[in-house]
Every structure is written in C-alpha cells, then in structure tokens.
Length: 300
Image: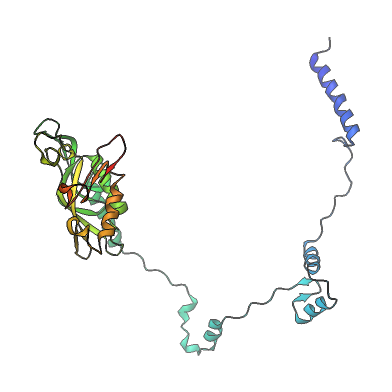
C-alpha cells in the first residue's frame, strides 16, 4: 500500500508546479544567466550624479563653475579649507621663539601615592565608623534601648554623629529607619538649600530620643521621640560659619525661602513634619519623624 505521506507529497508537488506555471515564476532549478551583471563604477556614478545635480537652466552655469575651479570635467571638487590665522601667526614667528617641545605631547604628572593612600584610608575609616550598613551614616551601634515607661524603647538603635557628610551637633539616638530618612533629606535638599558655594555642614539638634509624651503633656500619647523615630532640628550651620536658626531664619528676608524649601522637602522622606507655623510648641525647630499615617504624610 502507498503511504499517506507519499500521496500528500505528490499532491503538493503537482499543486506547486501548477502555481508556478500560472504565475509565471520560474522554478528554482531553472538555468541561471551565464554572466552576472557588472556593477556601475562608483567614481563615475558620483561624477554623473554631482554634475546632474547642477542647475541646467542657464547654458553657461556649468562652464562658469569649471572656470573658477569648483567643477572639474568629472564632477564637483571640494573647496580647499583656508589656513587659520593662528597657523599663519605661528609660522611668522622666529625659529628660536618656537620651542621644540611643542612638537611633543605633554605627559601628565603621575598622581602621588600619598593621594591614593589618603583616599583609601578615609574610605576605610568611614566604613569602619558606619552604621545601618550605609557608609554615609556615621555613628555607633548601641543595640536595644530599654523603656522607662510603657510604649518607649527601641531595638537595634544607633547613635548617629553625621549623615551624608553633614555632622550633628550631638550624637543622636534613633533607629536605622530614621537614620536613612534623615540621610536622604539632608543629601538631597538640606545640604545645598542655601547655595552650593555655602553648603550646610552641621545640623543643630534640639532633641532626639527621649521617653516622654507628645509635647510633654501629662497623660498624653507617647511621642515618636520615645521610640527613636524622631529628631528636632533647631538650626543649620553653613560653611562660612553662619548659623541659621529656625526661630529667626523662618521669617528673615534672606533665609525664609531656603527654610521653607527645607521644610517642604522633608514632607515625603518623613511621615510627620512640624514647623514654626504648626503650633506654639514648634516655633523654634523642625520636628520630623517616620510615623506613618493613613492619609499620607502629615506636614504643618
């Protein structure tokens, strides 16, 4: 018996031959031309194209271009670039005034090994003094902080001395979550708020960890300060030694815009941001913490 595969292949072959005959397409095994087509010479084609692109409206246009040297019988000829005035002035100088070393490339000085050693030593020292697994957060790990009253205390707390190269006026106890938020705020917005030529170099810390109620009210809820998740900043020290306090800088003509920019930028990295216009308790400092609220950051 003849297999179905042979029948199918035979039918397909007949159909293919019919399609080729109808469409006029030669089969693949048709005889190829004995001689391949020769490509047009590139140089002559460019010449023909360039001369063909010239305007033909006036009969003497091509002859005029050939006469001034812009066109050759083979096509367009590029215009020679003029010699610069600097080269002509240098060539006119006396030979004894032109040093021979100008003919040679200047070799850069090799960087002293002391520079590399100092950079490596500084980075090694920063890595050794870093906390929270971030080299830009310098301080010391202190572990768990025991609670003086219910609701206070912090686990895996650290005492931070600087963030993003900006020092704190006193070592501040906080959690790593709080330290990361403080670093992001300082590095992105605080450091250059008063200008890149007069950066913030230090933060004046008014309060950090303290087991107390909110605004020290008797019977009130435990403050985020009591959980190591808040810090109060009362001033910013600049490179030139100027100290901009929140109390005076918030309304001063030269500093009120940067101070409001700093306050606004904190709303995002932190969950709660309170400033001089929040209430009478925060007239002289910014309170920032990482508490989360249902409606998003609470900023006043």
